[in-house]
Length: 565
Ligand code: ARG
Image (cartoon, rainbow, N blue to C red; front, side):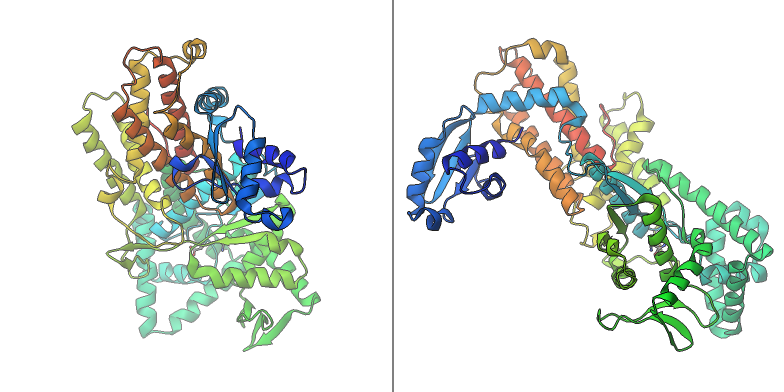
């Protein structure tokens, strides 16, 4: 139900069709302070059209608003302020939530269009870092939000499983590797070999050539190189899968960089045909002077391809395979230039659909104000972080609710949820300071706070023996005065979803559910919901509605909502 639309319709009639319903709907505002009304319509811009002072126009419009939806209309200066009929609107909103349940807030503007989402995309033989956590969590939430709006998301894990670094890794393994050790602790050993390679190569530059030649062999399909690479890849994926399972994230495709090895010749040919490839320092590049970007490197002097070459092949493949309406890349802002170049090259190749590609950057995860990096081994391992968070959640449960039945599961839901929420609650461009204590707080803007509010609401429903059937027969509330704040928040859900979808910004949903949780907790502190009264069923129906929206909001962020904690 959309009261803005209803008001826009009434204004349209009142203005005798001089301004379109859409324009009117856009002009309708929500007063900052609810005591001024629930909706406001500014009349300034009508003054010219009507050749009248805006406040007079407001007065005239006021007379024409005769709908039971609005219980009071006031003119304040040039504004028409409208107060919704609390009883009528509350009952409509609540019965809508009860009917639609988790579909409340669904949108249909996506109309089934495919959207590919390049997300997570860790590099094999390296630990899954906090940076990849950000991409995973943000990408997953965007996918769910898009789906809620009618799109069909396709989650693609563009694994970093190809490139010169794997030549180096093979060289390192050939020199110093120990099969048994790698088997026991793959990522750690492989990372150590990689670090050792860089240290030794500083003293012995010939190693670099060795690495390059191993990668060349890999690209040419050399058996030994391929089988080592395959082994490193399998072991890495085993470790990554544990993390994805813990976080409940699934992918539609694991086509990583290696997948495009046999698809790059075509790209290079196309670039040649379109006369876009030029020689520069013995390498092949696409010049992007008009775009004011540095040239995009396509092929090195030794014939090896690059990250960008694989991304070009991937873009073509995705367009041909999924015919996307949008193609998203959830990758840290350090790679902004790369994506600008990628899109620019595709445009130069004459592909209009390059305009539908969007890089979705995000800020860094900081520890004590500094960047966390893998190179120097100074890295916080995500799996350890998640496990630590789960442990902390568990000791919290032991303290607060020692008799809880499924402690393990709840500890996992809360521990993982805390990490995810902490990541999503701020605009994604902000850097985030990593702090487990902060994430796991039960007060303030945290995942556990929202989950706790949900569990509390569920317990109220249990205590009140509430069932949906009983309440739909019960008479509703007489005034909905004290409930109004919460009802107004419930009405805002679809706006939060729309904003999140349009801006690829899950924090809109995160902020929204914190606000809803806060207004609900305030209400619950003021009103004795469970006290016997004629209005008890209606109050419980409101509590139920809050659980539906909190749960759905958390789900959109990729977070579970335990009913008890
Ligand atoms: N593996 C890359 C990294 O960790 C991210 C890949 C992002 N996706 C892409 N299509 N380039 O930096």
